[in-house]
Amino acid sequence: MAEIINLRQVRKAKARAAEDAKAAENRVAFGRPKKAKTLQQRRKALEIERHEGHRLERGEPEPDSSP
Image (cartoon, rainbow, N blue to C red; front, side, top):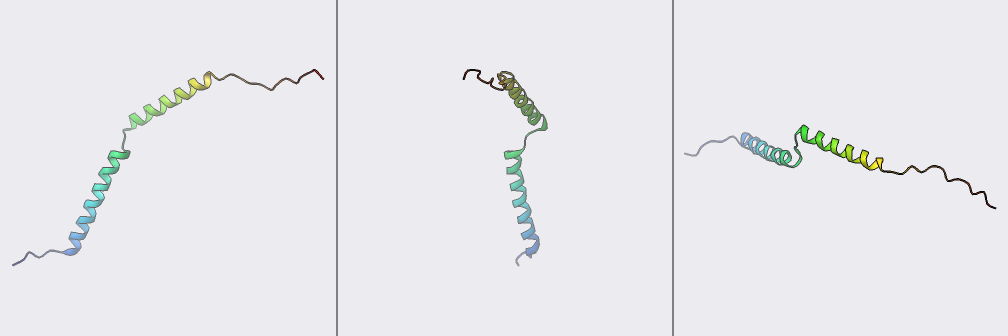
């Protein structure tokens, strides 16, 4: 005699397994620890600050007095 299965339960279990697999892929692709994220943000801010620190100030061009 064959084993009786509930098709609704099988369908839901299959959907759950697919969602779990997708979640695992997303954790690998997008998951980074908070410490790593903040470290990268601090490094980028420091890099921008250093870059802007080397900028030469340009004021208004002085009007030419010669006719």
